Amino acid sequence: MPAFIPGLSLSRAFFHEAVAPIINQDYPGLSYSAALIGSGSEVLGYDTEVSTDHHWGPRVMLFLRPADHARHAPALRDLLSHRLPYQFAGYSTHFGLPKVGGGDDGTQIPERIDSGPVNHRVEIMTIDGYLRAHIGISAGISAEQPLSAADWLSVPQQKLLSLNAGEVFRDDLDLAALRARLAWYPHDVWLYLLACGWSRIGQDEHLAPRAAMVGDELGAALIAGRLVRSIMQLCFLMARRYAPYAKWFGSAFAELPCASELIPALRGVQVAKDDEDRQAALCEAYESLNRQHNALGLTQAIEPALLPFHNRGFQVSAAWRYCEALIQRIGDDQLRAAAARAPIGSIDQFSDNTDLREAAHLRRKIAGLYQR
Image (cartoon, rainbow, N blue to C red; front, side):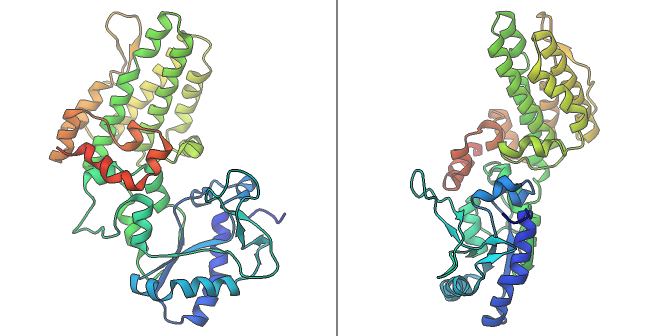
């Protein structure tokens, strides 16, 4: 096994040292962009040696203009299969299918060969084709034709993050401009998401202690776990950072400015021995979250102290205060109307179902949830 190289570094070197020279020799003057973006732990910078067993290795994405793709893609793919080395930096450039298990599910496994064409992972595509497949949206995004609020809300943050993570190695087609347009939400969409994040907390914060009152410790712990996740989601929004999917959610959260203050409290919620300890940890997290809201300066300052929940003997953040204050600052009529009907938030805020989040073909239907 060769010494581990982070996948993004491997891809960068693979492009410059192996792929680009072949293109330059046989297709001089061809305009294209080359990158490693999209799916893969290496795109986010979280890959380790464990990542190398599938869908990982020397790979790169080539983006051609539509006419050039139609004219050159098959021949270029074949050229690379015969000219690329069998190994690069000690890693195989050939990818096969799993030898054992449930058939061809699309998984690609690095496989060493020493003869014949290479089944490489130099993916050749157009920017528009890639975006339609990845997020269900055309590449025709510009200052004159921006995404609608419903479009933004129907794309999972993991996918927006993956389009902005990784690296562009060559950029004749201005892939960087597209990434810049998707770098963060428009202001009103951000306000709406923040409000919906508070709404999620408000839905649950009084339920955990109530479940504990009737002896349902498992139910109380489960609700508290939902609250931890909702608090973390809101922290990503406050920090203007897209949140990754579940595998790297905690790792990315640890990089946020608020992490050192909040992680002890959130871990305290998860390991609490009883409801008293759990509520103390949750209240500590609520107070931190309340202070973060005021620090953003998006609304008038709201007293960060917790409030009693009726006469039930416990306190809550009174999340409705923050939700209402943020909604009042939204200028977009469509978003204000959506918040008034039901502040369900983005796809990430109302569903954690992987199949739904990955279904780019359902994006338009999801966007319809926000229409009048």
